[in-house]
Image (cartoon, rainbow, N blue to C red; front, top):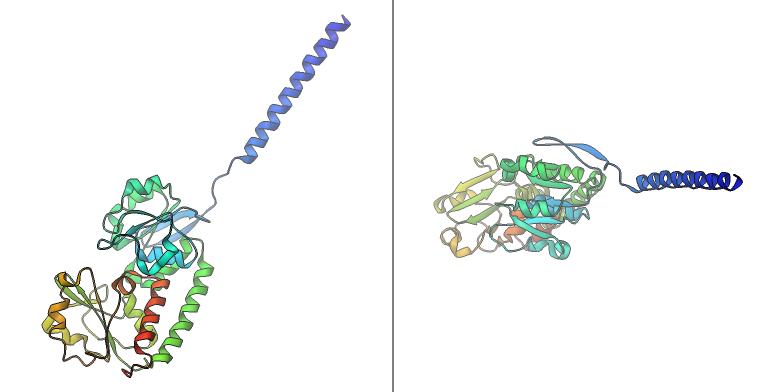
Length: 312
């Protein structure tokens, strides 16, 4: 009888111990499981999106967002290349190391993007509004608007990345550099124009474009033309006099022989800036590098070209 009672007590104690262990294990496992990621609301051109407070796997589908992310020490897991170049923009150097190419700006590869399991996708409405819903099914998606200007795009992107404060500090640094370059080249009161040669068309870029706004920040006045909603004017070779200015910067999109460059430069000798104050600059940097890093390159190019040149 005593043996049976002792056995019963041991069994009961073992059962209680097992129950306590199971409960403890469950509590420990529950404590180790990650809870829901913290999110916050980001307002953008297509609405408001709940994004992770600290996104870790970012995919950028346009160069302004790639530039901004890298300038704020965020390396995306994926990005797109331009339609005329293999790989990511060269001016970004080794900052792009390890970033997977997921299609082109014109045609992002949705399957490749999904495979990267992003927690944030960044792009612009002018590029990808048609696939916004598809992108939003992959991950929280934030879009910017080119017509707002590069600084507004930078600020929205920085906010989406959880780097708003760092973004403000970076823009303050840009403003200080602008003042430095403007004084170094004597830009105040001078005129400048930007000409871009493309297949079948020639554009003059106005003060609301990326590179045009950087020149305006430095102190240059750009031509007053009938620009479109993106601050661009389209001219023929016979109309290139509209680009007349103290200084002319030009870029070429793609292979020069396949653009209007030869036709236009053959007849633009009458421009005041040609030849000594007409400078050819890199298209990726001035046209695609729409962000802080690209702006810094434009400022460097302006200072290098004009400081001590006698053009102004």
